[in-house]
Image 1 (tube, rainbow, N blue to C red):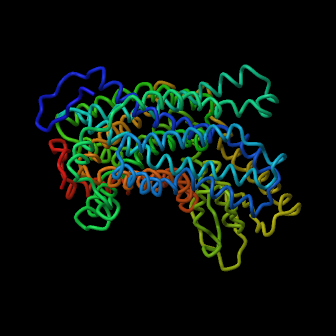
Image 2: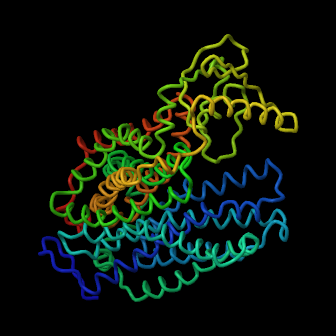
Image 3: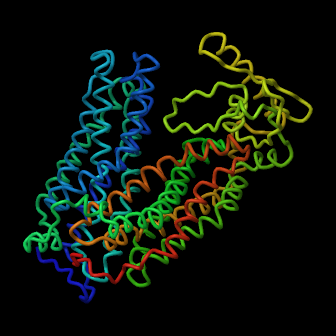
Length: 555
């Protein structure tokens, strides 16, 4: 392959071979997000097919494992495939991750449901999800490393920034496929077999991506150290067992990817959650708003990647973190005003108080969506948080059943105890009375379409995406440049996937738990703000600038 990236070389125009490398390396990331959005969008169909006959205890375990495959398992995939990438090469390793990811996704589309296989069906489904999670853990590091090691000196930020755009491509691809299928068949047909088609279509993407990647050569940086006998024999031990390298990984996590992850997840995933769940905007309109914001913001991934080659990775990433810290509260407040001004008025004019024994109130962190919070305090706070009602907390004597005060009206909560008909009846009675009370106090059931300021809402969402592009556009180049060639794949993959899989992946349930505990719909923003502030301080004080580094170094 006629590509050179010698340190100190003069930046040159992108060639046809360069574009092939970027395209081939990006397909895996497209796969990642295509699969991610399929699993989310088709969750109801998946549950109906694979978990329909599972008892509650087993269902809890399976759901937990399925969630873990998407987030918690990624760092382990990063360790395993990162090690392979530093031992046998970048090209062959991400061929393996690509194939594993594609076949696992395809098998989900073929897998018989619980009605056919019984308990084996959910077990096999979870196995597929675990394999996907492991594969995803190795894919990003391989793609970023491969592209960066092919890029000419002075253009690594620009080249790797193309990989960062593919999340949007995966989003649009999954939405288009599902939408086309839904409008081309009846709801019954889609529920019976149509939902499987998006998973089956992944085999086409797999075939194309493998065909492209098989035409590529090994990265020049790895090929050189392999030929010279300088490749690592124990990359994980070198990367994380030696303090001089382990401290770089810690810096990459706390001074880079942790802040990047929370800004990324807040700007896209939590923004969508806030629109639909907090502001009660209908899902179709919310998706359109987010899609327009993504379309506006996506070119800035490339812009900030290019700019990072000129002024450095560090100032752009840290500026994105700082802007998020300073502006999230006013911007989310402005988004409320633009999308649901009636809710904003109710928050100001109709104060609500929860009177409860503090010992009965849990921190409702529920990342799997399956935990039960059954005390009267938890039930009252969860109801108010789900309905976007701010409230203050008032201490009650020990053993007191929690209650909600709305003006001069007091609504007693209840302890749910064991599930059953009686608990269900109490829950319905409480929900009906409490819902009527908050509606009477002015809290709306949904955003009024006639009162939505669409241009302002889209502008605010586009600003969120702009922050995402600032922290995410240059991050791949920075991670590649932090580590020497012999341990680069292992070294960069782990902090990236801990940052994005754990700090970012657990952001929505963490925010909800904070909102439920404090009684303010904006208080959950403290989580991304604190993490982004941590990254800003650590990055500012300790993170080196990397844009001019020679990535061909072996030390």
